[in-house]
Structures are given as structure tokens and as C-alpha cells.
Picture 1 (cartoon, rainbow, N blue to C red):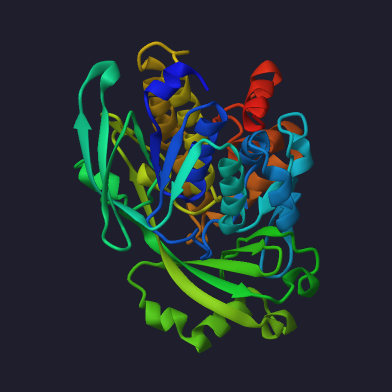
Picture 2: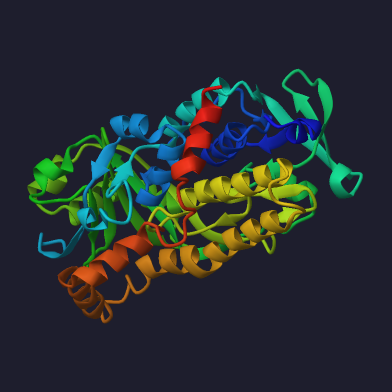
Length: 420
């Protein structure tokens, strides 16, 4: 750890989800001391994001956790589009990405499987002070120039108040970010015209439905939905028009009828429904990813539609790129803050120009029977043309806009930091 870094004191990272833990680990691996603050008493365990794209697995490999994560997940080697009658309209094989990534597949595993791996690696650096049950209640900028920083006020579960000073604070505290609120930044999200219904079943759908891929999009004028095969269950995700009564949608008989329509005949009747719940779909993008010395990443900075599973992956990319740039500033490798501002502006641009448009394109026209034949024909053309297939999967995996994994000497330096 350089003396320059030590003189600045620890960077505060707020939020111990995938984004906050990734950012903290990136910083600690480069010799920057970190204080990680999490309002919960433990890591979150509820079911949330569950898709890890090749670009993200490349970065997690750099941090030493992708192999362990893969052992707990389901490797997805193809994506498929089909109709309710079982006709497969198009299929793309992730193996075509072999020359573009070290992980030519998508991984289905819940984010709660990743966070303990990141926390263990972070703890092993010896450079992190991890504080659970600690809520940020105040943030104030102090000083200016190279000596500036942020004074944080925190409170633990017993009501004890602590005031600490940090050169920078990285807010990864989610869509209801307290730090965003303290900074006076906008936080209202724009809801999409649909919300989502997620039905969970332990029934092995690929044994009931011949040829069903673990990532399948059913596109049919009668009903459209997504089917995701997880390590120990399947998820069926339906889009429901906003304004439709949620209680009616969640009524057991209504859920059963929807599943039987989605998987006709014996397959639909054989499905054992373990759980059904709804969640909102919304978009949000901060005008700027910093307020003085407070930086924003992940859901604190952006929300997108869940289509394509891009939002958490993008948040992890935020953490890597922002963490690298901040470490360079603190270590004196990048004079001033230009490198940090460039990284933050790039992360915002990626959401605005790639993540949101690509996510929205996944569901555009699903409710239009007139548009469906043309969309399916386009997918068939993509699958039939090798160059188009590669381009589609590169963009679907964010490989064209993700931070590049460190290689060569830079990667060796990172690894050596981890084992000091």
C-alpha cells in the first residue's frame, strides 16, 4: 500500500450488495483501505438478480470468485425463442463468443451466492473494515482540493452515533439510496407500462417440455413470457399491463391458469407452483454520477427494465471501472480527478446509450400480434448468419461496453496485492 493512499484514510463504500462489495474489493486489491457500511445485520439473502453475463464473469474471474460462483450456478450455453406449440423459431449458441470472452456462456445463479464470495475475498485483503447494522444518517463535505473529503454520520442498531471522515464515499446503497437523498439528487423512477409476475417452480421444465433451453423466450400471439432454468428451480416471468389488479393476478387459480396456458396440456398441469410474486419495472438515470466527493454506482445511479438481465451486471461494471479510476487517483497514478470523471461519465453513457435501449428492445412489440411475425423473422435471420449471431450475443452480454479485464503485468499486480 502506498504512503500516498494511506494519508487519505479509508474510502467509505455504502452498501454490501454485489456492487458495493465489488467496488470495495477492487479498491482493497489495489492497496486502498476501505470502510464498508451496510444497514442490514447480515448479507441479503432474498431472491433478486440471477443472471451473470460473460462480460461480468470475466471481471469476477479477475477478482478470484467466478469459478466458485459457477460451481453453484447453472451454465447456460444457448438462448432460444419458441412458441406455445413447441416450435423453435431461433436459437443462438454462446460458443460463438469463444474468441471474445473467457466465459462463453451465461450463468444463472442468485446474487446472494456471489456476495459471500466477495466478502470473503475482501476480508482476506486485510484492508477492509466491514460494519454491518450501520446506517448512514448524514453526509457533509469538508475542506477542498486535495485535502477535501466527506464527513459521514452513522448510527448502529443500538442507536450509537459515529462520525468518520473519508476522502471519497462510493454510494452503492440501492434504488432507495439514502446518500442520493442526502445529496439532494433526484430519485423518482419512471414506471414502465407493465409490471412483472414471477412464478417459481421446482418442477424440471426441461424434462416436461422437449428441447427447452435454460434461457427460453416464448413469443406467441396468445402469450409471451420468459423461462429461466436455475440450479434448483425454474422461473417463469410474465409481463402484466400496469393497472391490472395485482391481487387478481396473484390469486392461486389465476396463476395456475396462466401457467397451464404457457405450458399446454400435461406439462402445464404437472407444474408444481412454489411461489408467485410481482415486482415493478422502472427506469431511472442520475444526471451525474457524483455529488462532490460522493460517487454513485449500481441501483443508486440507475434502474432499467429487468429484460435481458442487464441492470445488476451493469452495476458490477460500474463498481469495477469506478473503483479502478478512484484507486488511480488516490495512489497518485492519475493526477487530479480527470480519470475519475471520465470513468463516471462513461458509466452513465453506457446506461443511456446501450443498457436501457437494449433492455427495452427485448420487450418492444410483445403485445402486438401484427409485429410478432416480423420480429421472429428477424431473429431467424440473426441466428442463420454467424456474424449477426456474434454481434447479437456480444451486445446482449454487454461485452462491447464493459470494462476490459486486466491482463499481463496489470493483472499480476492485482493478484499479488490480494496475497500480501
